[in-house]
Amino acid sequence: MRISVFGCGYLGAVHAACMAHLGHEVVGIDVLPEQVQRLRQGQAPFYEPGLDELLAQGRASGLLEFATAPEAAATATVHFVCVGTPQRKNELGADLSYVRAAVDSLLPHLKPGDVVVGKSTVPIGTAEQLAEVIRGAVPGAELLWNPEFLREGFAVEDTLRPDRFVYGIADTDQGRAAAAVLDAVYATALDAGTPKIETDMATAQLVKVAANSFLATKISFINAMAELCEATEADVKSLADAIGHDDRIGRRFLNAGLGFGGGCLPKDIRAFMARAGELGVDQALSFLREVDSINMRRRIRMVDLAREVCGGSIVGRRIAVLGAAFKPDSDDVRDSPALNVSAQMQLQGAYVTVTDPKAIDNAAKRWPDLVFVTAVEDAVAGAEVVLVATEWPEYVGLDPVALRGMVKTPIVIDGRNCLDPVTWRAAGWTYRALGRR
Ligand code: UGA
Image: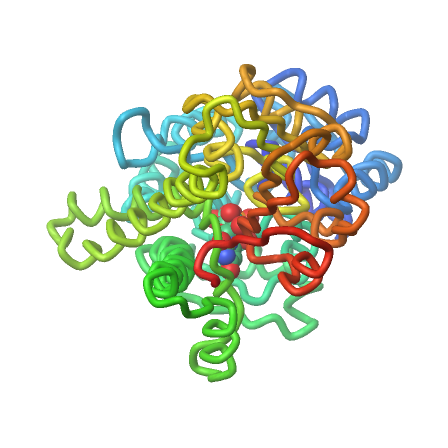
């Protein structure tokens, strides 16, 4: 099939490369010329495991093209909308200007029978408005809503082998015909037995924000328990293990620590609250405000813990922060708890040196005043406190004995509960973590 993908960021670039990998002819369209240039050279504009290989493969096969001009979509029959919906400045709600601009730029090139597939995360009601615009401009063209659930770091895997498909479809013959077209696009995964839920537009949009809200709630739940653990000398990791054995609860997403960040969970729960307010049901989501607050408190508590281990003040103290990305296997620093805490400590007078295997460039753009180094050894040299803020495997696997010889004071704060306290203490370190004795 001939496919266009509007927006070549974390979602769109991966989607375009994966669709070409499945044998479709794909053109990815983005307004940023540098982004398009890199993609044409087969290089991902961000770090995502497996993506460079897929881009190179797509370019070599001739199935994957990139362009800045929306005219490139003219020969495609299926058009995916994958542009970002960031949080609006000084508001909770989502900025839909990129979605509207993408659809507007597509309209002159749309033909009857074409299918537009919305994948961006949008406030409920957006899809219905876009569908009207599309049907009004090009009778016979149809819009489906098909939210994505990919995780950064696993984006290729999640796109090629998703755990489910959700289609939001208008209850008309045209809507059902459009769904059949999307089935053909996803034939490989559907034939392999991937579950598909066909529903109305509103539910499809809700599925996405409900899923992210649930995940955020799960993380904040265990972080609230961490606060309880801190007050009672209990251990949050044992607690998570113990409750996680109950299948109804499950152990995943119960890792207490610095909390959630990134370009999705924080802004999605806020946009969801804003939309609920507009719909007159803000009470239904008032718990999300608490979820957000618990999450933000972890960052403050982390700075307090650093102050505590420094004997009451971090002014002039050397703190090495391992990790800048919002999670491992990503170079994304959007709303990164690691970077937020690093910046707070620096603003409060500490000498902070940050390292990260992939995210230093992005982090330095966001916080140019922080000191960044590439090697862990350089970051920890002479440090009075080492703070593990992102659980990259290379940090989890650090040898505490070797590291001890490099620091000034062997104090480690495990911001992600990812180190073994017994081994670190045995190597002579003072080990501290959120929610643990
Ligand atoms: C999230 C969702 O997991 C995806 O399903 C969704 O498609 C995506 O948002 C999106 O909306 O596009 P992602 O932002 O890549 O994916 O990251 P997650 O793996 O969900 O992690 C989010 C944050 O939660 C990270 O900062 C991570 O460190 C933190 N986290 C995760 C915890 O603090 N504890 C945990 O147990 C799990």
